[in-house]
Image (cartoon, rainbow, N blue to C red; front, side):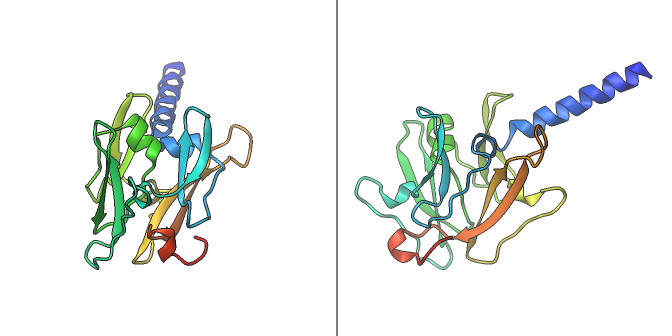
Length: 185
């Protein structure tokens, strides 16, 4: 009986570590939200150890403003090459990423698979990974957005101390430059 409890406790601990290893930004910026269309990306500034709402990096790329007007590829996306130079493009699928993950932790990585579109950092493995969107399985529920919107994940603080953080899924406007947007998210 004691061995069974030890095995069950070990499996639970492993499951919690595995689940906690993902969604790095959600964990770092728990309790934060971005509602201004000028600064729609929840990001982390490691030098200041704080979370901020940032503009899309492709809106200011060495004086160039990127946007997507093709009906087949309407979503602005970005990643950074190994040398940390910015790559902007347009995609068929909605895209949400952070500068911290893609520039600071995972330069040279990009996630192009519709099944695993989220670039994340796994602290346990000390590795960059492509994962399924966290909103595709929140307590067994798959969250989706209407066409033309971007699905964004964040976490709220637990309701009780040392409780489970609450994942939040939001549908936001596609990331057009501010001059093309109208209002809050």
